Length: 227
Image 1 (spheres, rainbow, N blue to C red):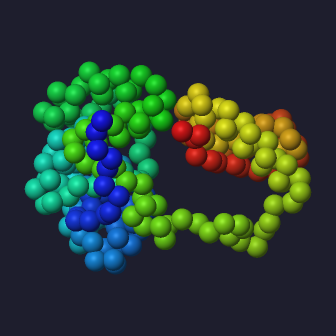
Image 2 (cartoon, rainbow, N blue to C red; image 1 turned 180 degrees about the vertical axis):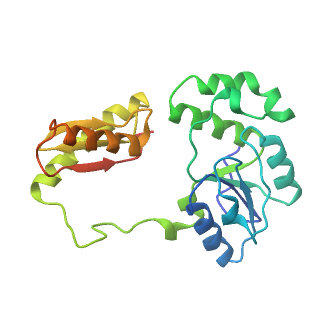
């Protein structure tokens, strides 16, 4: 039986960074605790302007060997994958030698939904001797507090719609479909699929413009998959 991964975070932390500002927020929180952060922004996802003035190493999707070699040389044992990333096609990757050796397994990982793909990526990362961490583990400050964040609070009708959406997502998540749904008056009017949450919301706007959704209300519910 393999040994359990270490639970104490120590040494430098590698952040593989997709798009958005969240990777930098996590990096700043981790650095504020005195821990060194190694930034690996992804070409085509991260914005070069965000990394100006910060120590970083650009990598392409598929260049895990390059990133792993640099991280090991600097004493890094833990990795966080964070930031937005449009699911790449297998043919758009630029694999280095290590990734090429694992290509049959990488190809198998692409034959499934996003959760299937990410689970296989996590397994490959850990097989190379790294511990994969969630961003909330290394920077708990990024988590939202429980309860409403603004002046609006869900009504009793909203709560019923939310409960219906969560029930649906708990079922749909087992099939690795999506993480979001829109419910209006106990009616599921849209569910997230390959188009992503923004695409789903654009579709809801079109349905409203066409008169297919008439009630001037509704809830968007997004939740982690059960796994």
